Image 1 (cartoon, rainbow, N blue to C red):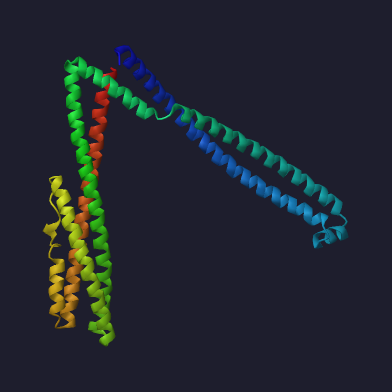
Image 2 (cartoon, rainbow, N blue to C red):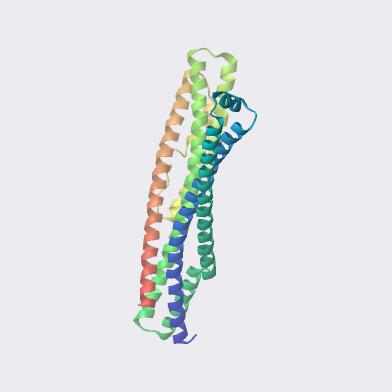
Length: 313
């Protein structure tokens, strides 16, 4: 594409972006107005329905009409109710007109936005064409554009790694939370069995909960190992240092060596403490990952701004 055409398209694409932003702001205002108009219309229609019902009651053979007739003021009351009904009709008609106007404004703005199309895609395509031309021409700007592109690629790759680690952290937290819930239940049954002589049924319930907890801890253990792998890709340590890695193996030993209810209760409490520590550790990891994601977003935004400056300026 010749230089003149590249610059012309870049200018037109930028103008489209600006126009889109203006229409988008107008659309927000129009949307709020439409919502308010619809709310006012609903209220006006409800008030009109009430006034119409009042008139209908006086016009029909109802107790209200009989009582008003006996009092001798039925005609006056009916006139008053009809006047209120007419006022309510006017308010409802005004609200309807306001709502219709707001809806038309929304349609106009939506049509303008649709006509502009994907302005961001057009802008990025125009920048890409300009970048291709600048690199072909060579010079300091071309060299810096290459550096910017390389740095942006690195940050985008890090964003992918961070997103994968964040997903692994959420999975680990979910597995640990489920295990914590099951251990809490097992602890309750263990306390009942230990101090209140729960008997065979309590022991069965306790062991059932412990079996479920063991399965959930195996899932948590696997999720934590996966998280450790994902964190390693980012140069971060896993959460094995808090003693979570041995939880399921330890519990498997407990199930084969249960001698007293008191011993089992202490083991469950120890498991709960370790799971709680693991949850705190993973939550810390999640916070660090969020900070790294925000930092990557900021770096990419700065690089994008620098790229635009090199191409447009």
